[in-house]
Amino acid sequence: MKAYVFPGQGSQFPGMAKDLYDNYSVAREVFEEADKQIGFSLSKIMFEGTEEELKQTNVTQPAIYLHSVLIAKLGASFQPAMVAGHSLGEFSALVAAGGLTWQDGLALVYKRAMAMQKACEVEPSTMAAVLGLADAQIEEICAEFGGQVVAANYNCPGQVVISGSLAGIEAAGIKLKEAGAKRVLPLPVGGAFHSPFMEPARVELAAAIEATKIHKPICPIFQNVNAKASQDEGEIKANLILQLTGAVRWTQSVEAMVAAGATEFIECGPGKVLQGLVRKIHAEALVSSMDLVG
Image (tube, rainbow, N blue to C red; front, side, top):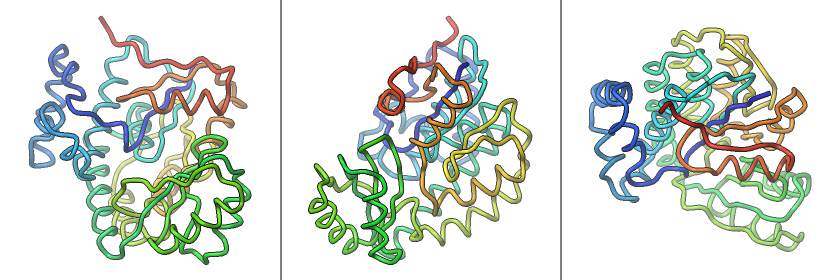
C-alpha cells in the first residue's frame, strides 16, 4: 500500500518550484492566485530569493505548502491509501487528500506562520536536536523542567527535537549529554515550536480552523499529535488545533502507517528529508519522490 508524506519547515531552497512554474500551466495559475491571495509575490521569493529571505516563517511555510500541494496535483498517479505530513506538512497532506481546498489551506498556513511569528516575539525561546538517546530518557529529563522544556519532534529513533525557553534548553542540553546523548545541537529557529510557548498562536489559529470547511478526505490522514488515522472532519480539526502546542509524533506515525499496511512511502514536496527519516524508522520500506506527469 502507498503512503504519501509531506515535509515541513526546513526543506526550502532557493529556486524551489521554478521547474513546476516553467513546465506546467496549472502551477502558473496556482502561483498567480496564491500571490494575489496573500498580498505579495511569494513566487518571486521562491524562484529568485536568497536563503535568508526563504527562512522567514511567513515565506517558508506557504512556500513549502504550495510546492508540496502542486507536486501532489501534478503527480503521475496520486492514489494514496493513506497520507501524513510533518508539522506544516499536515496541511499539505489534508489538501492533497481532498479534505481542504488549496486556497483554504493556504489561508490557514499563512495565518499559522504569522501567529507563530508573533508568539515567538512574546518570549524568547528555541529548539535543539538530541541525537543518540532513547525517547523515554529525553522525556524524563524534560519533565524535570516543569513545562519549560518539552519533546517536540520525534523524528526517528535516536533523533528527537526538544523545544523550550532559552535557559531551559541550555540546562536540559547539559543534563541530556550527561545522560549519554551523543550530541545536542541548537537549531536555527525563531522559537519553541510544538510546545506550550505556542499557546498564543494556537488560540489565534483555532478560530480560523473552526471557521474553515473541512471535508472528509479520500483516505485516512495520520495526524501528528496522536499518530492515529482519521477521516472524521471534527477530529481532524481538533488535532490540527492541538498541533501547534503538541508534539510531532513522526516516528509513531510511520510505525502506525506500516502497521496499517503501508509498504511504500512517496514524498511530495521539496527535498528528501522524510525519505531519510522513514528509512531509519522502517528499513524495509520503499521510499521515493513523487513522479510528475510527463
